[in-house]
Image 1: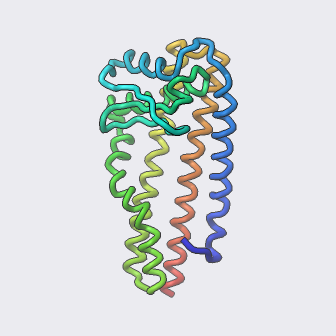
Image 2: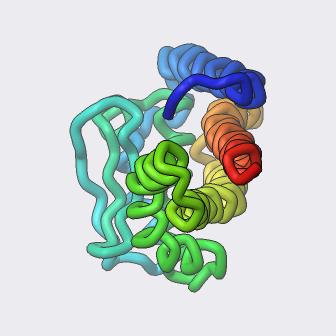
Image 3: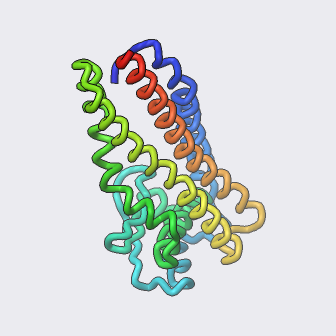
Length: 226
């Protein structure tokens, strides 16, 4: 938004976020080079797990980009990036199973996933409008506008907080799928878990950054009102 002395509050969380990004990239790259013993691709594993859970109506598609994997509940599609879709690595299977975990959550009406979906529209607007509104209110000493910006930011933060149990639960499901289904052997399961844990760390870091930013906005509003 802009620099002021309160920005120092955010620095530890920003450093944490940079570490989390480094961790996920290094861990992913490490196990992307390690072929799983089963020799199946991420797409094949995703399809088999979905079928095992009676989710034949969920499709598996290839999408562009790197680490762009996601499950789209609107059209019930698991989309996997090239490294995951056609990859046979431990990392590929871990990520593919994680996205299937979201599809299973959706099928079982997992509460936090539904809450996150309901929060998404306002959180999306909030993430775009919070800072501009707060800045305008700060510059022109318009307290109501600052308060509206803060509430928009709270909505965006709430979305990130709710995302945490959704992601951790999907990762736990993924490890169970891979272990119980025999897609990874005993030595490979901890490696897939390491990939998923590193990815989850990025969500924790993003939440930490947002939380410290909210504290900063509240302090700035208090200073402006004084």
